[in-house]
Amino acid sequence: MANEKLYIHEFIDIIGHNRAKYMHHMTANWSPIAQQERKQLCYGVWGVVGTTRGWPEVVNLWEEEGWQGQARSFRHEFNHPSLQNPTLAEWWSAASGLRRHGDDRLLVPAPWTRSIEELCRDGVRGEAYAHELVKTVPGRSADYLKLVRDVAMRSYEPYGWELCGAFETAMVNDSECIILWAIPSWEQWAEFEAAQRNDPGIAKWRESIRDVALDWHRCLLVDAPLSPMRTGRQPQVEDRRPLEEIP
Image (cartoon, rainbow, N blue to C red; front, side, top):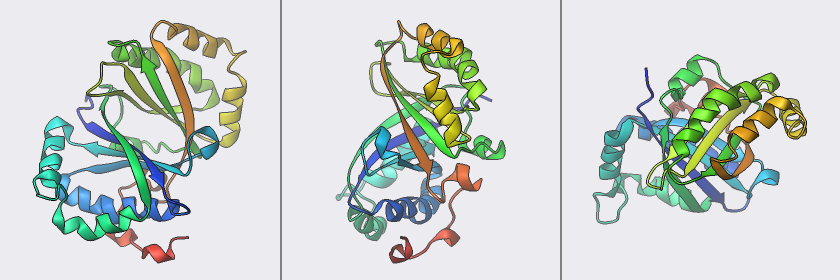
Protein backbone atom coordinates (compact mmCIF):
# COMPACT_ATOMS: atom_id res chain seq x y z
CA MET A 1 0.00 0.00 0.00
CA ALA A 2 1.33 3.44 -0.93
CA ASN A 3 2.43 5.68 1.92
CA GLU A 4 -0.04 8.59 2.02
CA LYS A 5 1.21 10.10 5.29
CA LEU A 6 2.69 13.56 5.73
CA TYR A 7 5.72 14.29 7.90
CA ILE A 8 6.94 17.21 10.00
CA HIS A 9 10.73 17.46 10.05
CA GLU A 10 12.44 19.67 12.63
CA PHE A 11 16.03 20.78 13.25
CA ILE A 12 16.11 22.00 16.87
CA ASP A 13 18.85 24.06 18.54
CA ILE A 14 19.32 23.02 22.15
CA ILE A 15 20.27 25.33 25.01
CA GLY A 16 23.38 24.21 26.86
CA HIS A 17 23.43 20.66 28.25
CA ASN A 18 19.70 20.06 27.86
CA ARG A 19 19.65 17.70 24.90
CA ALA A 20 18.77 14.55 26.87
CA LYS A 21 16.04 16.41 28.76
CA TYR A 22 14.63 17.83 25.54
CA MET A 23 14.53 14.42 23.82
CA HIS A 24 12.68 12.97 26.81
CA HIS A 25 10.29 15.93 26.84
CA MET A 26 9.47 15.35 23.16
CA THR A 27 9.07 11.58 23.34
CA ALA A 28 7.55 10.80 26.74
CA ASN A 29 5.90 14.13 27.51
CA TRP A 30 4.72 15.24 24.06
CA SER A 31 4.22 12.20 21.84
CA PRO A 32 1.47 10.46 23.90
CA ILE A 33 -0.53 13.72 23.88
CA ALA A 34 -0.05 14.10 20.13
CA GLN A 35 -1.15 10.51 19.53
CA GLN A 36 -4.34 11.03 21.49
CA GLU A 37 -5.28 14.54 20.36
CA ARG A 38 -3.93 14.65 16.79
CA LYS A 39 -3.31 11.04 15.72
CA GLN A 40 0.28 12.17 15.20
CA LEU A 41 2.92 9.47 15.57
CA CYS A 42 6.57 9.85 16.50
CA TYR A 43 8.68 8.65 13.58
CA GLY A 44 11.93 9.47 15.33
CA VAL A 45 13.82 11.76 17.68
CA TRP A 46 17.59 11.82 17.28
CA GLY A 47 20.62 13.62 18.60
CA VAL A 48 22.82 15.02 15.84
CA VAL A 49 26.45 13.93 15.84
CA GLY A 50 27.95 17.39 16.16
CA THR A 51 31.09 16.59 14.23
CA THR A 52 28.89 16.21 11.14
CA ARG A 53 26.57 19.23 11.61
CA GLY A 54 25.64 21.95 14.12
CA TRP A 55 25.64 21.21 17.84
CA PRO A 56 24.00 20.68 20.24
CA GLU A 57 21.13 19.80 17.94
CA VAL A 58 18.16 17.41 17.71
CA VAL A 59 16.14 16.15 14.74
CA ASN A 60 12.45 15.37 15.26
CA LEU A 61 10.27 13.64 12.69
CA TRP A 62 6.50 13.30 13.14
CA GLU A 63 4.03 11.29 11.07
CA GLU A 64 0.64 12.87 10.30
CA GLU A 65 -2.47 11.37 8.70
CA GLY A 66 -1.87 13.02 5.34
CA TRP A 67 -2.69 16.60 4.38
CA GLN A 68 -6.12 16.54 6.02
CA GLY A 69 -4.58 15.21 9.21
CA GLN A 70 -2.12 18.08 9.15
CA ALA A 71 -4.99 20.52 8.64
CA ARG A 72 -6.70 19.12 11.74
CA SER A 73 -3.45 19.48 13.70
CA PHE A 74 -3.09 23.10 12.60
CA ARG A 75 -6.65 23.87 13.65
CA HIS A 76 -6.09 22.18 17.01
CA GLU A 77 -2.97 24.23 17.65
CA PHE A 78 -3.57 27.63 16.05
CA ASN A 79 -7.28 28.39 16.49
CA HIS A 80 -6.56 30.18 19.76
CA PRO A 81 -5.69 33.85 20.38
CA SER A 82 -2.27 32.84 21.70
CA LEU A 83 -1.63 30.59 18.63
CA GLN A 84 -0.93 27.79 21.12
CA ASN A 85 -3.25 25.20 22.62
CA PRO A 86 -3.85 26.62 26.14
CA THR A 87 -4.05 23.13 27.67
CA LEU A 88 -0.37 22.68 26.72
CA ALA A 89 0.88 25.89 28.34
CA GLU A 90 2.87 23.98 30.97
CA TRP A 91 4.44 21.74 28.33
CA TRP A 92 5.42 24.74 26.16
CA SER A 93 6.88 26.53 29.17
CA ALA A 94 9.13 23.58 29.99
CA ALA A 95 10.17 23.17 26.34
CA SER A 96 11.14 26.85 26.03
CA GLY A 97 13.84 26.41 28.64
CA LEU A 98 15.44 23.56 26.72
CA ARG A 99 15.56 24.85 23.13
CA ARG A 100 16.15 28.22 21.44
CA HIS A 101 15.17 27.77 17.80
CA GLY A 102 13.83 25.29 15.26
CA ASP A 103 13.72 25.02 11.47
CA ASP A 104 10.76 22.95 10.25
CA ARG A 105 9.56 21.62 6.91
CA LEU A 106 6.73 19.40 5.71
CA LEU A 107 7.78 16.23 3.90
CA VAL A 108 5.89 14.11 1.37
CA PRO A 109 7.10 10.50 1.35
CA ALA A 110 7.92 8.52 -1.74
CA PRO A 111 4.97 6.13 -2.18
CA TRP A 112 7.22 3.16 -1.42
CA THR A 113 8.64 4.64 1.81
CA ARG A 114 7.62 2.66 4.89
CA SER A 115 5.56 4.22 7.68
CA ILE A 116 6.92 4.15 11.23
CA GLU A 117 4.61 1.25 12.10
CA GLU A 118 6.04 -0.74 9.18
CA LEU A 119 9.62 0.11 10.12
CA CYS A 120 9.04 -1.03 13.71
CA ARG A 121 7.29 -4.19 12.50
CA ASP A 122 10.27 -4.95 10.23
CA GLY A 123 12.75 -4.40 13.07
CA VAL A 124 14.67 -1.62 11.32
CA ARG A 125 17.27 -0.17 13.67
CA GLY A 126 20.72 1.35 13.51
CA GLU A 127 23.55 2.06 15.91
CA ALA A 128 23.61 5.31 13.95
CA TYR A 129 21.55 6.89 11.16
CA ALA A 130 22.57 8.91 8.11
CA HIS A 131 20.49 11.98 7.30
CA GLU A 132 20.98 13.34 3.79
CA LEU A 133 19.65 16.80 2.93
CA VAL A 134 19.69 17.16 -0.86
CA LYS A 135 19.17 20.26 -3.00
CA THR A 136 18.00 19.32 -6.48
CA VAL A 137 17.47 21.13 -9.75
CA PRO A 138 14.05 22.79 -9.39
CA GLY A 139 11.31 20.40 -10.47
CA ARG A 140 13.44 17.27 -10.11
CA SER A 141 13.03 16.13 -6.51
CA ALA A 142 10.81 13.22 -7.62
CA ASP A 143 13.51 12.16 -10.11
CA TYR A 144 16.03 12.11 -7.27
CA LEU A 145 13.82 9.82 -5.17
CA LYS A 146 13.46 7.43 -8.11
CA LEU A 147 17.25 7.26 -8.40
CA VAL A 148 17.49 6.53 -4.66
CA ARG A 149 15.19 3.55 -5.16
CA ASP A 150 16.76 2.31 -8.40
CA VAL A 151 20.47 3.01 -7.80
CA ALA A 152 21.38 4.18 -4.30
CA MET A 153 19.79 1.29 -2.42
CA ARG A 154 21.94 -1.20 -4.33
CA SER A 155 25.04 0.95 -3.85
CA TYR A 156 24.57 1.32 -0.09
CA GLU A 157 23.45 -2.27 0.56
CA PRO A 158 26.93 -3.90 0.58
CA TYR A 159 27.76 -1.77 3.63
CA GLY A 160 24.63 -2.86 5.49
CA TRP A 161 22.88 0.51 5.22
CA GLU A 162 19.07 0.18 5.09
CA LEU A 163 16.79 2.86 3.70
CA CYS A 164 14.40 4.19 6.36
CA GLY A 165 12.74 7.02 4.49
CA ALA A 166 12.82 9.00 1.26
CA PHE A 167 10.97 12.32 1.22
CA GLU A 168 10.39 15.43 -0.87
CA THR A 169 10.07 18.77 0.90
CA ALA A 170 6.65 20.29 0.32
CA MET A 171 5.89 23.98 -0.31
CA VAL A 172 9.16 24.57 -2.21
CA ASN A 173 9.97 24.32 -5.92
CA ASP A 174 10.23 20.49 -6.01
CA SER A 175 13.86 21.12 -5.17
CA GLU A 176 14.71 19.41 -1.88
CA CYS A 177 14.80 15.84 -0.59
CA ILE A 178 15.62 14.21 2.74
CA ILE A 179 16.86 10.62 2.85
CA LEU A 180 17.33 8.55 6.01
CA TRP A 181 19.44 5.39 6.34
CA ALA A 182 19.83 3.00 9.29
CA ILE A 183 23.49 2.03 9.80
CA PRO A 184 24.07 -1.21 11.75
CA SER A 185 27.40 -0.15 13.27
CA TRP A 186 29.89 2.71 13.40
CA GLU A 187 32.37 0.48 11.58
CA GLN A 188 29.96 0.10 8.66
CA TRP A 189 29.57 3.87 8.53
CA ALA A 190 33.37 4.21 8.37
CA GLU A 191 33.69 1.58 5.64
CA PHE A 192 31.09 3.35 3.51
CA GLU A 193 32.68 6.77 3.86
CA ALA A 194 36.17 5.39 3.17
CA ALA A 195 34.86 3.85 -0.07
CA GLN A 196 33.45 7.06 -1.55
CA ARG A 197 36.18 7.44 -4.17
CA ASN A 198 37.02 3.82 -4.98
CA ASP A 199 33.81 1.75 -4.91
CA PRO A 200 32.35 1.28 -8.43
CA GLY A 201 28.79 1.01 -7.04
CA ILE A 202 29.07 4.30 -5.18
CA ALA A 203 30.70 5.90 -8.23
CA LYS A 204 27.73 4.77 -10.33
CA TRP A 205 25.31 6.28 -7.82
CA ARG A 206 27.11 9.61 -7.69
CA GLU A 207 27.32 9.76 -11.48
CA SER A 208 23.59 9.02 -11.78
CA ILE A 209 22.63 12.10 -9.73
CA ARG A 210 25.12 14.51 -11.26
CA ASP A 211 22.50 16.27 -13.42
CA VAL A 212 19.79 16.13 -10.73
CA ALA A 213 21.43 17.06 -7.42
CA LEU A 214 22.90 20.52 -7.00
CA ASP A 215 24.37 19.71 -3.59
CA TRP A 216 23.89 17.43 -0.61
CA HIS A 217 24.99 17.16 3.01
CA ARG A 218 25.08 13.93 4.99
CA CYS A 219 25.11 14.13 8.77
CA LEU A 220 24.84 11.43 11.41
CA LEU A 221 22.12 10.88 14.01
CA VAL A 222 21.74 8.70 17.10
CA ASP A 223 18.38 7.52 18.47
CA ALA A 224 16.90 9.08 21.58
CA PRO A 225 16.26 6.39 24.24
CA LEU A 226 12.50 6.38 23.49
CA SER A 227 12.72 6.81 19.72
CA PRO A 228 10.46 4.20 18.07
CA MET A 229 13.10 2.49 15.96
CA ARG A 230 15.11 1.90 19.14
CA THR A 231 12.20 0.60 21.24
CA GLY A 232 9.99 -0.90 18.51
CA ARG A 233 6.96 1.06 19.73
CA GLN A 234 5.51 4.53 20.22
CA PRO A 235 6.39 6.49 23.40
CA GLN A 236 3.84 6.02 26.18
CA VAL A 237 2.66 7.97 29.22
CA GLU A 238 4.24 5.27 31.39
CA ASP A 239 7.67 6.29 30.05
CA ARG A 240 7.52 9.68 31.76
CA ARG A 241 10.07 10.72 34.36
CA PRO A 242 10.65 14.11 35.97
CA LEU A 243 13.03 16.12 33.80
CA GLU A 244 15.25 16.65 36.85
CA GLU A 245 16.01 12.91 36.76
CA ILE A 246 17.21 13.00 33.15
CA PRO A 247 21.02 13.42 33.10
